[in-house]
Image (cartoon, rainbow, N blue to C red; front, side, top):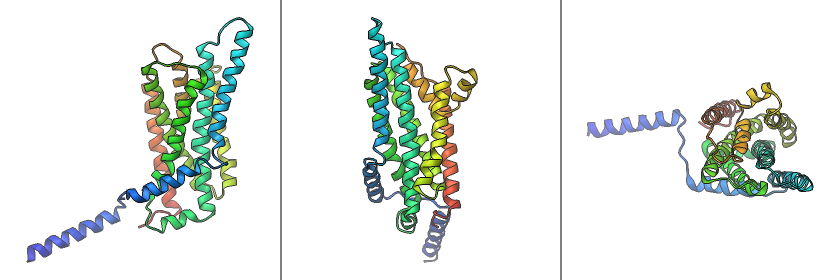
Length: 271
């Protein structure tokens, strides 16, 4: 009897330690409900325009430069197609990932629905995954569509490289978006503040080709890695940028750490 009582006591103490350490259990029914809600949000008029604009600008650039090439009696080079793909992918990854995620989270803060969720049975991990995965999926789908929209026909190795880089960049952008969303008080302020880092993350890779200084900075940004991956698709044997993958991985971990700290600082973490 004493042994059984002592065992129960140890189990209770272990459960208490488990709860105090903040370990989270994912309830798949709750996560699926958040995923369904967030996925529907991606098709609202405020957010669906972001990926559509990215596809539109890629198609427009391809048609424009293609018509110029035809007027000169030539064909559009793959390097130009890769440039159109790069701009479209950069716009999609930053605008859909950072802007849409940040604005959605800021809106939930503004309407006090985030606080209500955190005081309910939904834990922070479920909310985080439910908020980021649908946006990352949308980025991936659009980035895949941008390749045929640009007219490029990559090899199997090129597709693997492109999907890998796009997946990592989509995760990085959504986590960065969560950081801005948790800091901004309203959807309007989020759209204003986020426009600055989006401009930086897009323009530095764009001008990296014309400036050695910009090129060095671009190598340290996940958008720069995405831009180089776009250029690699125009090559017959695209190379995997190992350094670039490491950069994206480090930025994901750093952004996730910053978000967790801000999340707890704002008092959303339940005990």
